[in-house]
Length: 76
Image 1 (spheres, helix red, strand yellow):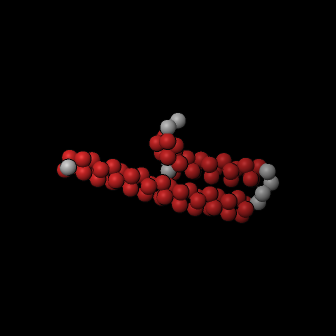
Image 2 (image 1 turned 180 degrees about the vertical axis):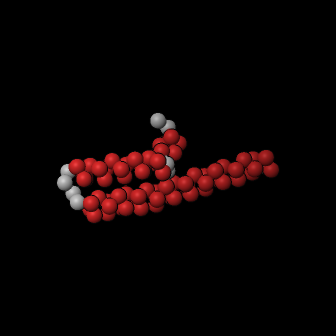
Image 3 (image 1 turned 135 degrees about the vertical axis):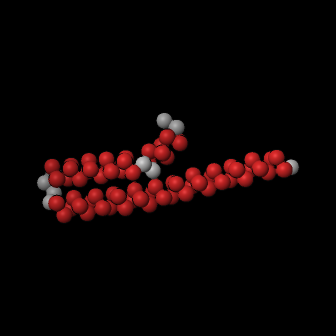
């Protein structure tokens, strides 16, 4: 798996929804009450949102820098 594939997966809302569902159901199966499962799900989704934003902005900045370098090569 390439770095780009990993970043694409980590920024996927479907991936984080699946992780959240798995952990929530696991907690319920292990005897946690519903409020604990909801809190854990909220924490996972909040962390996923922050991570996705950071990785997405990094990809945009890298693409912007790559375009800048390409135009500098042609102007020299």
